[in-house]
Amino acid sequence: MAGFLIAKSGPLKGRVTISGAKNAALPVMAATLLTEDICLLEGVPVLEDINVMSELLTYFGAQIERQGTALKIDNSNVKPGPAPIDLVRRMRASFLVMGGLLSRFGSAKISLPGGCAIGTRPIDLHLKGLAAMGADITLGHGYIEARAEGLTGGRIYLDFPSVGATENIMIAAALANGHTVLENAAGEPEIIDLANFINGMGGHVRGAGTDTIKIEGVKKLPGCSHTIIPDRMGAGTYMPAAAIAGGDIILTNVIEEHLRPVEAKLQEAGIQIYSVDEGLRVICERDKPGQCPLAPLDLKTMPYPGFPTDMQPQMMALMCTIPGTSMITETVFENRFLHVSELKRLGAKIKIEGRTAIIEGTEHLQGAQVKATDLRAGAALVLAGLAAKGTTEVTDIHHIERGYEDMDIKLRMLGATIKRIP
Ligand code: EPZ
Image 1 (cartoon, rainbow, N blue to C red):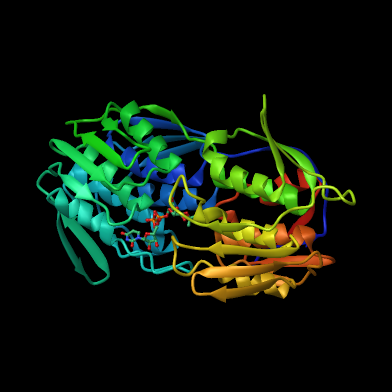
Image 2: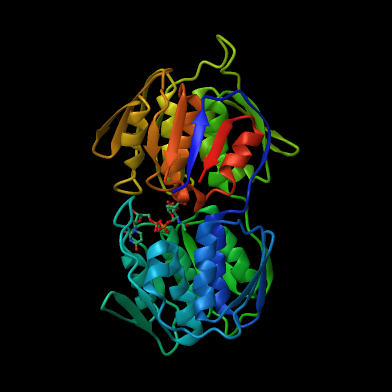
């Protein structure tokens, strides 16, 4: 299995261009099922998770062409056959095709996505929403089957502002009869991007980005062109990298507003962040003695606009390098501390108490062989490797490559010593 070899690096210098957001592209790709016309998507990152969604749509009959970061999706010949278990198992976001298939064809059958490393991740809220719109849902032999003669809009309250459930319900409601009101909805930027895509096709979604989303169903949706928003987690990952290794970098293709929760915490630690014409400049002159003494942090993950759980492991890597006691409380997922045991192999001092991690920062991390257990955990290990003396080998980087486009190349362009090994 492929790995990264990383040597202590820094200061990082230069520009890094952020790719389109995986977590925006996946629901938008699923939502193309709403139309029999062609959709053109720009800014789609070249990633394994995107390949899985493409394979799934192709399995249903879609014709997909990629040119660079553009995808042309033609769903005119799609038929709603059962979604194959191996694709759904490979990526939970496969379940996002449920809403589109059900509302366009009146039926969908998808294998249960099951849990994953970061938690059990049920789909009860997705199903509750679809049932409230009149879907008849049955579970059996590892599959979920939903049927509806025609979905009808309704009033749906989510117990938790689940990103995926909000997306699946929005997609289903786009072609439902009448008005759907989704309360306690997720307000992540990726939800707004999906709403913009549906509206670009002629749909009526209002309030995306707030906790109440109103969708007026339409009879038919034509295709459209849409550009995926930049990846706030991609950008967010290079920001602490410049703090861990020290540096002065500029991130281009970013929407600063989406990065505010991360920016605010990094500034609290003492990292300088400025908006510049090209994007965002991040400065931490850690390499110079007495410069940029960073302060420990206390953070809690929350749904947007709270601190994103997808940036928690990378922030932990940073905290491991800041002398003093930092704390992280993970409230979104029940098991998102898998990176802790790996960071400890690099000499980090971390104690877990329930959902809280207590981190005693040290300036003396040491290279070792560590394993990426999931996407963001893997990114955190790469960042820690930039600060560790000697060589760090991160194995199982297929997890990282599910969500980061050319992470090694981008870090190398910033001056880091990192090599991909087959
Ligand atoms: C999305 O996952 C992202 N994935 C995740 O990104 C991200 O961590 C997560 O949102 C939270 O921000 C994509 O967008 C493709 P949720 P999703 O439904 O939609 C519970 C990454 O690293 N829940 O908001 O699956 C669930 O168990 C990934 O890029 C229910 O209880 O997240 C979890 O504890 C990983 N019932 C919490 O809600 C449900 O029906 C948040 O999950 C659904 C969710």
